[in-house]
Picture 1 (cartoon, rainbow, N blue to C red):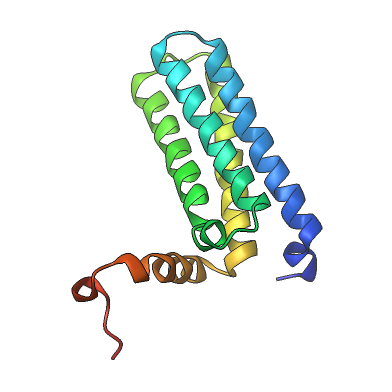
Picture 2 (cartoon, rainbow, N blue to C red):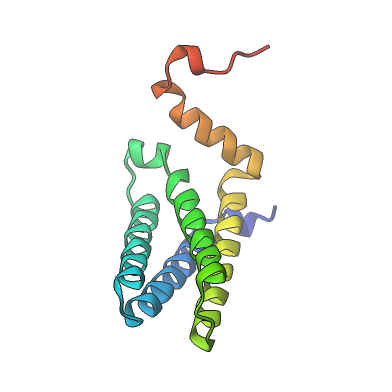
Length: 143
């Protein structure tokens, strides 16, 4: 991986792009009206706030669980795409929103690789962060 992707400026640009795409899809859903779209927009707003807090707050607990907003946003976005494909209605703005959401998932994958080095590094970091709160009998044993 290049040193640029590991740089602080690349992280700031990537986080800004992730938040911008999240806010764009939140805005699109908020303008559609109806309870389902409004709740979807509020979910995106909350997840955008978590991404910003994870990037800006130098607190130990936030750094320890910095993987969670990425997983939550990627899962929420994938679920939104799946819901649209199942329920519709299919119209131009819906496909634009789905394009934004696919780009959002792609940027989240790039961010995971940038921060953790690989998906395996991401899983290791996530397991290490929840390890201390998991009861001893559920922890994996090393061979």
